Amino acid sequence: MDWDLCLLGGCFLTLLSLFALKLRLRKPVHSGLQELPCLPSFPLIGSLLSLRSVHPPHVLFKKLQEEYGQTYSLMMGSHRVVVVNQYVHAKEVLLKKGKIFAGRPRTVTTDVLTRDGKDIAFGDYSATWKFHRKVVHGALHMFGQGTASIEKIICTQAQSLCSVMLEKATSEACVDLSPDLARVVTNVICSLCFNSTYPMGDPEFEAILLYSQGIVDTVAKDSLVDIFPWLQLFPNADLRLLKQCVSTRDKLLHQKYEEHKAQYSDNLQRDLIDALLRAKRNAQNNNTAEMSSEPLGLSDDHILMTVGDIFGAGVETTVTVLRWAIIYLIYHPEVQKRIQDEMDSNLGRDRSPLLSDRGSLPYLEATIREVLRIRPVSPLLIPHVALQDTSLGNFKVRKGTRVIVNLWSLHYDEKEWKHPELFDPGRFLNREGTGLSKPSSSYMPFGAGVRVCLGEALAKMELFIFLAWILQRFTFSSPAGQPPPSLEGKFGVVLQPAKYKVTVTPRWRAF
Image 1: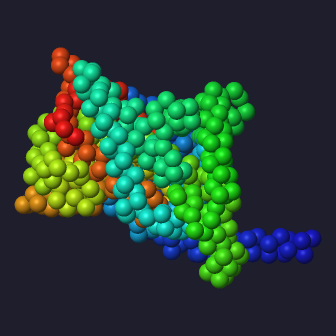
Image 2: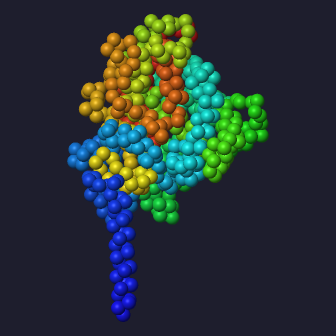
């Protein structure tokens, strides 16, 4: 009996010692740190009741600062989420501790979209992911990102856009530019990925537009199935539509990929898929020497989901920014005129704009930056996940916590921006107005750090060339007797403007 008590007491003391040791080991991380303020939370549903609002999430999260401070937490079902509304903590998440916060949450919809995280945007941070990104980065470099090949692709589509716009301007009092913008931007991506372009009405092209819109619409709904995965056991129309759209997308991608593999040659590089195939093979040949541990390879799924990423992130985002840009030019005709005067002075009407003209068109560049600030295409960056226990400022952050950087709050922070609600491209110019400046480090429309958008350079090229070409040739205004387009965006995968029509007036006929 005494022996049993001694044994029991010894076990108890051992467990107590292990527990104390664990606390001591964790103490350096959490010593002196505070718990984040948290929205009211209830069992099972978390903080969902506190998130009911007429405001879209990015605006609501900004407003909640008044009660909970600039950085606070909430519960989405069983998942703890930290919302960051200030640059100091955003910099810590994205840059200073970028690798610690580099994880991605697994959700039902993103798993369907990416074949269980085999893409770049939603794939979790790991050795395979880093290898994957390295291969994709190398492929983009080999294909010539930022060089004449991509510039020629964009300029070809810009010329096509201008031709269609001139035709419509002479036959219609007001036009919806969205379909034409979607066509040329999609064709840039198709040319980049597949070495092919499509006319409007082509069955394959229409299928691309249809499945792309279906994916955007369903993913944008932020389905409850992502908070409560067990709901997928029940009929779900949105999830069913998403699976149908992804199936259509994957059939097309698989067909293109198989064609490229069959025709592959080390001496042939027509597009990004060829470049990805070459980069993948080169990387695999050097993999063992470089990685030294276990070899890392990329499956066909990784390559297919990379192309899917480029379509998903490269079309809707660029089209949305172009649509917002036209809206703000309509609201601010003086900005539109100044851009055109700048172009007339530096380019004239004898030639079309090139990427090399960026330095001589600072006001156009500043306008693009201001559009990306005042209407960030993705107001809430894709959530990050803490891969270990860590801290954010003076606050504890535990492993597995999801972190949302509210770009909207950063871009509207009155401590960082003077009159942030006003559209003012001049804020991005130097005092002389002859060059660009960065008035605040809180400006990060493409994210930053380990998870920065891989297509940032391509997007900037497209925005500059498309806007330069159309503003050199056309002036935009609201149709007579109609109010200007709404500035209220529709929150989703991207912050989309409502549908609108414009009057397109050619500046001259001979082009």
